[in-house]
Image 1 (tube, rainbow, N blue to C red):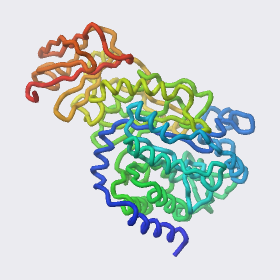
Image 2 (cartoon, rainbow, N blue to C red):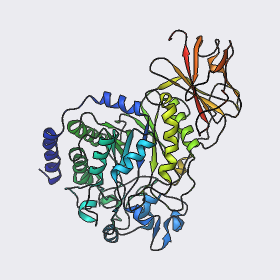
Image 3 (cartoon, rainbow, N blue to C red):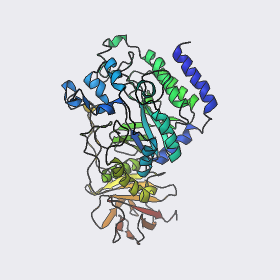
Image 4 (cartoon, helix red, strand yellow):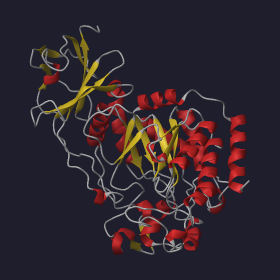
Length: 482
């Protein structure tokens, strides 16, 4: 038996003694879908460099000019492993506070958190007995952020998830890639012979042991979020899924485990045009980068974040919203306050988000004067895997709909300037075809004046609109559900 097999076998045995059999993954998937809004955190050695290497901005150099993310530092600058290992010894994030991160997520109205335990640079942000290139054994920090975050999430009532770069690892000699061309995302400076790389060796030497460690060292892990499946085979994806099922039956896995074997689909930096009935999640950034970059200051406003969240939920998805902490472990200045404004909105209007489902109509566009969402420009494949953000930042007045568990309908009125809202889908002859009995504006004690005709529902705003963010929610009760 190989060393990696022994490690995985030991982890399975350990899991049987320390992790109790959880509920079925279907229940976990349902709980995750009800949560709707989560915090994504990209933090690693790249955070220490802050987009620079040896005094130069990496994104402004050579063939990578204007491309790549901050966390692509090692690839962009082609930093030799020996040099990067020495760089890692200076990583001492003494201001890291897992409880502060969890509190920030809660204040923002988020209900789960996903953390980058190992990105493409191959550096584990947890104690990894199978590979010493990790924050506990190789840096000057000697603490396990994953263990601390898992405990903090448990204390603060957040679902905890781990991100793991599956198909890319620039620290390993056997991690071949094929995007956008053969070897396009591989470590070609330390390991130039792409044909000599055997993914299965890397898979058994590093991936399986570290996945087992993540699932046996930190208590319950409800969400496993893989990235970049690259060269993984269907058999290897199934083996990985089976390992996760054995260790933590309640853990759900995203589609990037590879070969269509995930529990939910991932949409990176974009939102689909229509509602999707199968579980899915959009992941998006506060600025343009995933990791911290001091020049990345063009943040999405609280209004734009709320619009993004309501668009995603109206299409039956979850939103995983990213922040890249600084190297010292703190969030960039102003981040917590910025996101808390979203949390304040959710404190009033969360009933239209948490535990809801898509309705028959996603929304209505006042600009087009029709019951549909405007078509977006299709993403170009040439922009994939570069600094890009296809999230709509426009502030067009429009509507989104979500359906509550008791049959109530939420009309989400976004960036509206007029005093009267017209919802054509709610006319007696429209999509609902049902008589309305009650209308309430969430966060307001004033009576809402409304009128339903065959063609439309007209809603009149009260004299004072609640909240700071110009997105409001009307709860509509139908006669057959009252």
